[in-house]
Length: 257
View 1 (cartoon, one colour):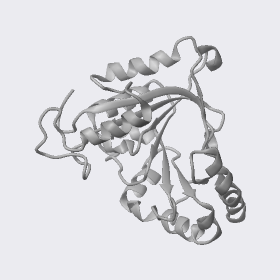
View 2 (cartoon, rainbow, N blue to C red):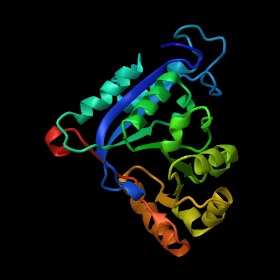
View 3 (cartoon, rainbow, N blue to C red):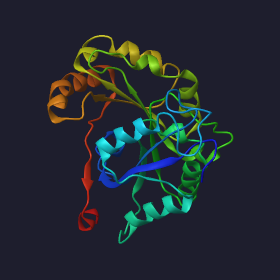
View 4 (cartoon, helix red, strand yellow):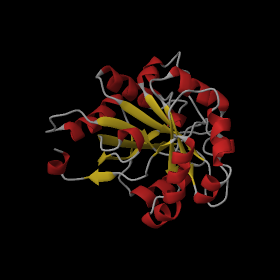
């Protein structure tokens, strides 16, 4: 399906045991999306024709480097449903669905992406979407999102650069108040945990009663060892919940049982 939203790519999908926050230990199907959304600054153009979309080659090169060449353009909602069904084969339980991939809400109103969410919600799946809290769909028009949990993942620090300024208050308002059991997930380094982190979190989450989780910066063991102790102590001091950043991918069907 091709329209003004541009192509939608399923970058990768895998079965995992979650290791973050409230869902730690929960078996889940992860769906990572990428695409060339014409509304995304720097990654699209209203002059685009067919596959010639400025920015697409860059995105594809990055994703290919990180996730290999297995990603493909989604052709239909039924195709995306079939991907999920493939992970369910032989299971005696229903895993969660976790949607990730940069900022999935770039595609939140894409007919294929939303069609998939709508059908999975109707089938009773518990869905969590990992978002950077910069974009939110019109939940009044796209009502299935009311039943989706959004992990509003705000990276407050990264090698000294502050990212909290990138959040969009209007997006947080929609997600925090208009959806099911959504929560904040702040990423900090040890420096910000020791000074300034509490103020940043209070500024972004003020007025909301959604749960707050904090994670240490880094996706490698060495980085986690560096930042985790300070962030764990920070959570204890301020009454936030601590979350690590690890999940275990399961490739063997026997492991999934």
